[in-house]
Structure formats: structure tokens, C-alpha cells
Amino acid sequence: MVARAFVVLAVLVLVAVTVGSAAAQPSVESVMNGLAFPTNLAFALDGRIFFTEKETGDVRIIRDGRVLPQPFVHVSVEGSAERGLLGIALHPDFERQPWVYLYYSEKGGASNRIIRVRAEGDRSVEVDPVITLLPAVTGYHNGGDMAFGPDGKLYAVTGEAHDPARAQDPNDLGGKVLRLDPDGTVPDDNPLGPDNPVYALGIRNSFGLCLDPVTGDLWETENGPSSDDEVNRIVAGGNYGWPDQLGPGGEPRFIDPALDFERVIVATGCAVTSDGRWLYFGSYLNGLYRARLLPDGSVGTPDLVAGVGATVTDVARAPDGSIYVATSDAILRLAGTAGGSPEPGSSPTASPLPGASPTSPGLGGGARTGVGLVIAALLIGGLILLRRRIARR
Image (cartoon, rainbow, N blue to C red):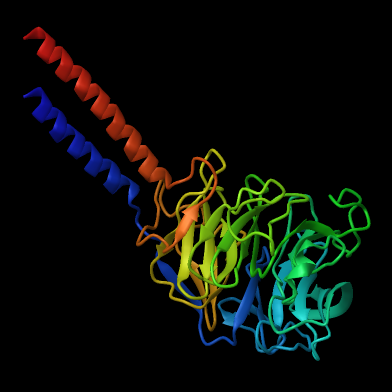
């Protein structure tokens, strides 16, 4: 009788915990449709949304629910393949220092560049070069995403321009995460010295760079040649392996990815929720995914968020904490994400990402870990009760 009651109790608790951990998904709202390949988003505190158009070279502004008729600025870009107007970031004190930073492939294919454009209202009034990145740019592996850190420095990710050896050369700007002062000078405390803008190396082909607003951690998404797309936590002076290591390899001089994907997903932009609990990242093939950032510093198994669709180009967090998503022709918003998660403890689960595996010790989907602990406790408790029952007979 005791054993039967124990089994029933275990089943009930398992069902309750499983249902509780399966989350209501955030609903997806349309912000703007019919756009010309928006690649990157940035937000002003006054509610304006700045976005880049990859192939036209225009930076557009959404204000009061409409796209303004005149571009904020136009830059002459080479927009074929993976080139174009690739990245945008606003100065962290944009209200007093209204600089808009742009990463683009210049017309003619000579270089990728970062410039900053001073805003006066909804128009540009001054252009200031920040840094010239990659001479002899190819059609692929150009990087382009940027983010300002809590230290006030500008971080930018570059590709290796289809030349893998560049990624391991500490004096080459290809295949790197760079760290710059807002005016383009190199900070004195950079990990490779005061004259070197390189912050991390061993990068192949990245479309995503984002900051955790709680911990300050820097996250990067990366694409492998035919497997091993990655999500990486970037640290000062870190080497992420390319071309010598793909995915986790245990080589001491390389940092293993936080997430590794056996199948190609074409990982794109990323954003961390304002409560620091969830990392959203895009896939140009599959849509939008979210992974739990666990208290021990590990990353849970990512799940697909329903209702977004494929061709995600960027994911970004607005000043109110809402998560926005850019696709090849639209901008979307995830309702209820302003505070971080749609609901406390929720997870927008559907099917797990094919081939995705956490690679750090202790990883594996926090909800499943909680269920396992409950079941283990019930099994131990039930066995103790059963043994006592038998002993009394």
C-alpha cells in the first residue's frame, strides 16, 4: 500500500513540475513590415528605433509607429553576399553625445569600416571615421555587429574574410572581437596591449554580439563551415579556436563554446533579457531561440520560440527591456518581455534545437534538473518508508 501510494505521488509531482516548467510563450507582435532587409537594430530612449538596410546603405528611423520618409543617413555600400550595411550602435550617452556608430562594407569592396555619425534630431550632420578594419574584403565572413559595454567601450566583431589564418594572428584585425574607445582609439587596458584593438581572437564568421545587462558578460554567435555553429561567452584575451578547433575540443589554449550545434543553423543576432535570465539568439534558417542562463554560469538547452519564422537577422533589447527581432523584411516585438521573462519561471518551449548541446560542466536545461532532483528525493524517501514498513512486519 505504501509503495503504491509512493508511485502515485511520484507521478503527480512529476506531472506538476513538468507542467509548471513548460512555459507560456511570449506572443509575437508586428512592429513594421515590408522593409528592405533590415540587418541591425538600435534604440533611443525617446522611443525611436534605428535600423540598417543591408543593401541600400540607408539607416532608417521608426518614430511614432511609422518609418520616416527620409533616411537618417546613407552610406555607399557593397551590398552583395554577406557585405553591406551590417551593424549599428548608439553611444551609451546618446542624449548628450548623439553619435550613431555604423559598420559597413564600402563600395568597391576595398574595406569594412566603422564610422560614427552625429545626429541632430532625425537627421545626420557630421560623419567621423572610427577605424578601417579589413582590406581586400571578400563577399563572406565580414562580421559587423557592435555593442557598448558597461565600461563605455565599443566592442565589434569581425570575420576573417575567408582567410582562416587571419583569425589566429593577433596583429590582424580579421576574425576578432575588437575593443575601442568611442572615438576609435585603443584603450590602455586592452588585453594585448595599449596599441592593439584586439579583445579576443579565433573567430570565423559572426553575426551576433550582445551584452548581459546584469553580469556584463559579452556573448557572440558564430557560424562554422558545415557544422559547429556556436554561442560563445567572450572574455578578455580569449582564443575561440578557429581554424584549429571547431566546437568543444578540450585544448587548453582555446575556449570551448557555451553552446555547440552539430547542424548548421546560421546563427545571427542576440540579446539578453533585462533580468539576465535568458539569452535570445536568431537563426536565419530556423527562427528565434532562447536559452536559460543558469545561476552557476552555464547555459541551458535552447528551445524554439513559436510565431517568429525564419530569416532572423538580428535580436535586440529595447530600453524598456522588450525583445525585438528583425527578419529579412520585418521587425517584430515579443510581448511581455519588458521585465525579462514573459512569466516568472517560464520558458517558451517547443522542440529542442536539433543538434544543440551545452558544452560546459553542469549544463542541461534547468527545468529538467529540477525535475530530476524532485524524483530522486521521492525515490529515496519512498524506499526509506518501504524499508521501515518491511522491517516492522
